[in-house]
Length: 328
Ligand code: AMP
Ligand code: MG
Image 1 (cartoon, protein in one colour):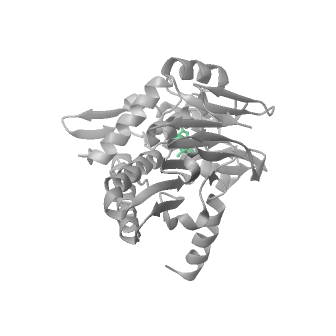
Image 2: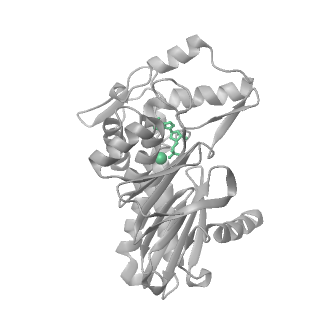
Image 3: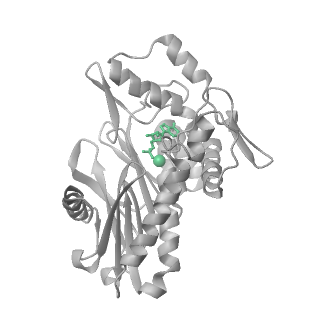
């Protein structure tokens, strides 16, 4: 590891721990990885040395990234986006299945075929101009999960449509890592672990004093502060917010969560949505989906599907659903 990365890793370890409390810093061994365009921290509390387990986790994350990356020329997603018919790996198929469930539940608010629109907004920043009506209409005409086909073991996209699994892939990878650590828990004497994949947190196993884990929720207006926390015995917590990633056009910020109906970043009075689930991919996809749906439709879906969620609104109000244990 280069020296700068070492320093970065050190800083990140101590940046994450305040987010997940009920654990003494020195109880945990930590591994920092940069993958999936994300800072990843894995913290394991164990009786023995877990460096070998960290290596297994690292290899697993890179192997998932190899299938889902938009930029690696051999990945399933790259090849699908290039118009090929692909015999996809089971990882890619599993992620597509989760994406489809979120697409259906959210009535199209979650739709990974927004890749063309994401790319369009990146270009808008480069040329510092908003999209023309024609460009927007052209991109919108290529959006729609029903333009992805899986038949006889082959997957392909209709002409011009592209995939971006950035709204669900990290959650999938986090669940896979959690499963791997659980499978090896006995061999390495693992007592508990905390995963942080850039805003997607997973907490498992024994905690100090038998208390619940506490996951701090970032104040949308202040990156240095939390606005309350959620408490849980174990599981995954995913946050989708308008402050996470954005492009700047004409001095205005345009965030990274796109409404597939308008082509513009979703703007509906929500600043962030947090979803708690025992499955990482579900938490990841649903936090993105609910953010696009807006409060009213999101609350209906949470009620119908029993989804635990916390909503931070533009006016500073906080709403919860599904019995999410939010503490101010
Ligand atoms: P997240 O940060 O998990 O909420 O996911 C946001 C990422 O998902 C973006 O950076 C895009 O890569 C992708 N994305 C943006 N809008 C959508 C959408 N409406 N449905 C699915 N994925 C999306
Ligand atoms: Mg997501």
